[in-house]
Every structure is written in structure tokens, then in C-alpha cells.
Image (cartoon, rainbow, N blue to C red; front, side):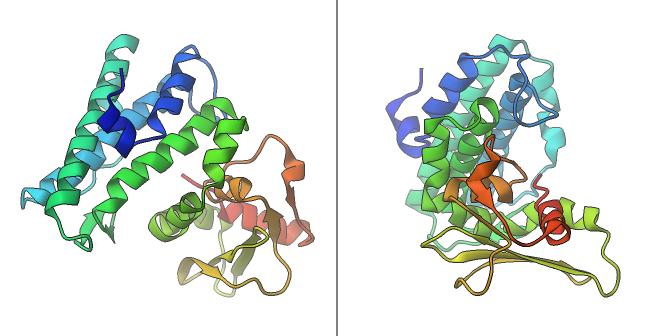
Length: 256
């Protein structure tokens, strides 16, 4: 049972929960390496870590973000125990983020995975995880497309998560001293998302539409591309960039 307070803070939780409960734990997903149970383990670890880091900051004892090894204890749980733990961790995150909204200045600087975020990041990031990983379960159903289309999803992906999303893809490019990749992801009626990679690092930012796009798509597909996903229907994205440029940009968009 999801309480009203939790639904208010994490409005995407109910749809995610229904998607999980409609499937077997060992069902496959659109994330190649994960079953439904793996997705739920990941989400339980996400909720726990977001609450832990924000709560520690509020207590005046900041902690570093743990890696995905934090998920290991949940793998030992039964399916019923895992489901209960997931709901419990989401409730705890709701309580911590509500307290932070009341007690912390909105621009407080909190370290999360090597970057600085504000208190509002923590609930919003869990919401994005719920949207994205629900898509991993369902693919391109109407609920997923509508949620991915919301402008805050693109904003959060670019400004709050962007650089980590490019790390794995950048390493896979194997760029030499003179190597550089740049891509423009365009959704008509919005700013482009420009991604870059060279030997000095990676970049991701919004920019006014200029020149040809590397990939043009609807807003939902653009979010999927940023996270290293692909829509079931490839006709939802378009490109005149040519195979070499397109392959490089899609490699850069490797996601987590």
C-alpha cells in the first residue's frame, strides 16, 4: 500500500509498482543485463542511498555516496522481503526529503557521486529513476512515453546527471590526442542537447538549435538516448549525419 504522502513526493511510484507486480521477478527487461528483480534491487538501493546521503547531510555528518555494491544485501532477500524493503526505503526517502524541504535552504550544496546538488535533487532523481526503469520493464507504452516526454526529465538528465551518463561511452570511444566527437540531439520546439567528448573530457549542455542535428526525435526518445536506451520503434528518431558520425555519438551515449 502506497500512502498519499509518498504518492505526493514520488508520483511515479505507483505506476512503477504496478509494472513490477504485473511481471514475474525473473522476467527479462529492456535493460539487457537485468531481470525485473534486478531492476527492483537497483531501485531499492537507489532509494536507500538517496535517503542516507541527504539524511547524513542534515545531521551535520556528510557521507560519501556508495557505489552499486550497496545493492548486495538486497540480493539475499526473498521476493516478498525485497518488495517490502523497496516500499520501506521509498517511504524513508519521502520522510527525509520532506524534512529537507522544510529545514534546509533550497540552495544548500550537497555532494552526490562526486558532484554538488541541492536538496530538491534527491526526490527528483528518484522520480527519474522510477520513470526510466519502468520503461525498462514495459517498453514504449503510453504511460512511459508520457512520463519521458515531461520537460523536467530532459532537464534533470542534462543538468543533474549529464556528465556521468557520458563516462562509459567516452571510454568506449578510445579517442586519440586529436579525436573529438560532438552530437546535437534535437527535439523540435526545444533547445538542442549538445554532447561532446575529447581527450580533455566530456560535456553536455543545452544550446539553441543551429545547423543540422545529429539525431532528431521526440522528447521521450531523446531522454532514452541520453540514458543509453533505444525505443522499440526506430522510426521515432531520424539522422542525416552518416554512419560514422552517428555511430560515434551513439557510442558516446552509452548510459550507465
